[in-house]
Image (cartoon, rainbow, N blue to C red; front, side, top):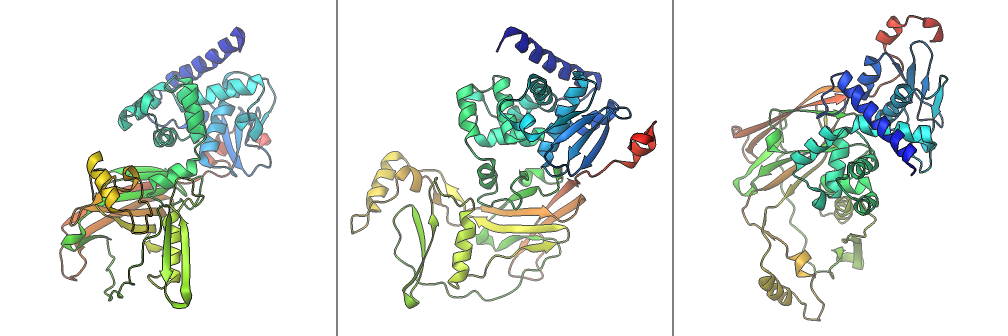
Length: 428
């Protein structure tokens, strides 16, 4: 990269910083890029464009058209990109932006400068560093989950966040290349405790008991993972307010079967020599949601009914699971003895101690009740859970959990305010 091009890119970054300062934007919080466009006098329109992500048009006071056929993160980046064309004065006519120009590897210089501007507007250093400080993350331990959480906090794509972390020299180029090889969907499935989001491009927001009484702002299609402590030995469970758990007998469990070799999980039905091999439990599995495969196979063998979604008001419960408590890993010497003890009579080796014996279930300990939920309507959605006995209809709630979730709708068309404020309505 020659010195003049580097200088122009630094000018684009400086121009973005000046714009945020001129508009008195809090740079430690997510940047409202749509609001920025409107603050500087640009009109915004959202329509289903074919083959385009957006366009800057000089009609009226100047404005931006953004496609409705892409995720919100891409819409936000497109808006910031078009704002860059306006701010950097790239020509007097229309600027049409295709996917290749924003997301491609070899855009023209004006598109590169608009990209640099967009990254600086959406991910200013105060926002990135405050997010990393909250996560307790440092460059030498930057994980894919941390990079995704930076992307989610900034409202941008995972790739854009990784590249900005490299631009700010928080990570080096080698680490950025490693992070870019990881698919965002796998990260979201990990955060969802094995549940793959219904909409792959949606964000996943984990919350716990520390969020009690707080407000969370998300976008339509996003999912929330609620993790609350629950001790099954007490008989008390978390229930959504107004929900009475059904009283039903539990069928006798099937007979235990011999363990399969490590790396596989099998379900056996003795009749007709029926054996269902569910999936491979290893890091190379192509199934992003192994727990769903287990549930389906169990349903097929009659061990449990197929999982079904539950609706409580505006809240759709996608998954409801309980994870047992775990105690810390045993020492390396104890792990070796335990590993030897687990070798089968036929000489079949046991799982590596570092993987199979990294923790042990704590009998009677407090585990985690995990709800994966999303919302059926935009606006304010209230979640309230009560902790009460699962075996008594007259038990009182011993604890409550409340969370307010604001679901922001996706934009469509032109706003009425913009139409009324137009000084020259002929262009509309």
